[in-house]
Image (cartoon, rainbow, N blue to C red; front, side):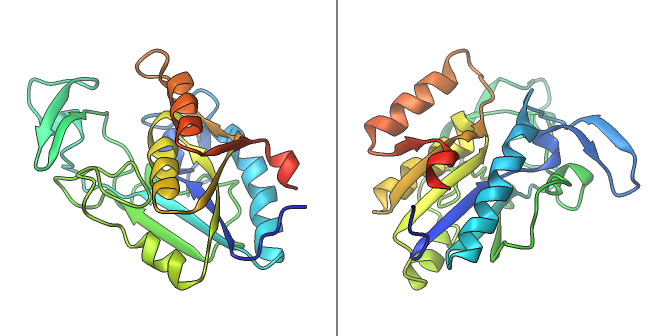
Length: 225
């Protein structure tokens, strides 16, 4: 059985705007988030099981969340004449992809999915809150220099191994896993607890190949449990 001591589970960006069919504070069902993955909510159940197991066995659970200001530089609406999928250069970042506005601070879309269990969570890390910097990785902003503080937090707790799941495989999970491996953590991506955006075509497959080449272990959560 996996030893959760000195390990942490990172639940990456399991937020309403990345999921279909979520429940708003009002209790009304919303058909889809602003940047919904077709099966984004499929990660919730395996992550809930892992979170309870990890916390119960002495490990740590961290949930990350995009937390963008309304005029964030990664939003196409912040650049007149441009549309989602176009790219721009930002301070320290070349070729930033533009997205539909999502996970705006304080919005329904920025909330964690209503079925995601937060009781086992020890720390919530919000990222992408600087107007001119997006943040795919849980460890660094997209300029690849500005830290989020997560590495120091984990190292201070003596964490040496990380389990990763969440959204999306080809963006925030990918960048977080590559940084985790580079920073010296034993890094495992839970293949049944991630879902990809698939933009551009083939990006999910390339993400798995890139992670594997970087020494990231790809494993089903059932093998951990």
